[in-house]
Image (cartoon, rainbow, N blue to C red; front, side):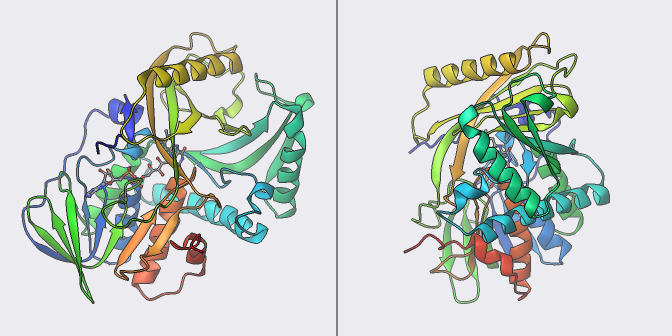
Length: 405
Ligand SMILES: Cc1cc2nc3c(=O)[nH]c(=O)nc-3n(C[C@H](O)[C@H](O)[C@H](O)COP(=O)(O)OP(=O)(O)OC[C@H]3O[C@@H](n4cnc5c(N)ncnc54)[C@H](O)[C@@H]3O)c2cc1C
């Protein structure tokens, strides 16, 4: 089946013209950890392993950062897709709050990386806004605000009387320093550059076609017959895990994005705060360093081998109209990029990190949910600890089999 995870003209791979190229694998190698997948998740794993003197190789079947990583909006926020009180059916409030804490920790980790190696990926720390324009959702936002406030998060409540944005807000929560944004293509490549300097190996155009499991190692077989003998394998293949397991990890949807041409001002979008509304599915918005506006949302069920162009165009038009109606004071909004991609949600909004149930040397690092990139950071730290025999208590939140009966 020809599964299309990304469609359209993604902003980040398009604007980054000078693409670094990596070789393909032309020899058999022996290594501590083989990471399969060269998106942002594989790159983050490579960085944390290298930083901890664990020898790793990344095998990417096509080009580095050209699948989901090329379309991610890269809004990095500690909050989850659902509000705390809506998560209680699937997790405890304590766990959900722990996830917020972990999100903040992941944001700090990214900032520390930038402070150490320089800002080569248009990183910017941002406040975040969660809001509703509907009267019947005011109470839900108030509950979320109270829970965050009571639990020590730096939040401010806004309503119609204190709204400083150009769009309708009935209730909203501003989280101070609650997020950041970056260019995911540049970030992935910067992580890999740093990892390479510390000894990691990276191969593109090197598809993994099979794994042979042994007691103390795994043989990773690539398309042209070369093998990697690794003590552990990390699956960082994003939304496609069929080669490794029959497990259906998450509910997949397709989410749509449009990006404008650079605009002359941001009137009505104070501090270019990261924005998410409280709708289901929700809309998410950010700006870029070259003064573009991005809006995403309008999610539909993911159908693996079918791309419905008419539906996509309808969705892009809805997003364009929504953007224009929210920001009437920003003149000359003109769409430049349109694309969509697969997105995976889980009941408790968290990704999956940890060993396979059957093969203990096969480890997953799957950043599912809206915080995929932050989960990749957290998971990479957890798997580094696991390799070093260090207990990481937070990993149980992300356990691969947590929804098994
Ligand atoms: C439109 C959209 C907006 C999003 N917005 C956000 C957001 O704002 N914030 C956020 O945190 N997340 C967001 N996400 C989610 C985010 O995109 C993902 O969490 C992230 O990109 C996943 O990266 P990845 O490296 O795991 O996957 P990918 O980038 O898909 O990388 C997986 C790689 O594995 C390779 N691969 C697969 N099979 C093999 C094989 N057999 N051998 C070798 N290589 C293989 C693929 O070629 C691919 O390059 C968004 C997603 C979409 C679609």
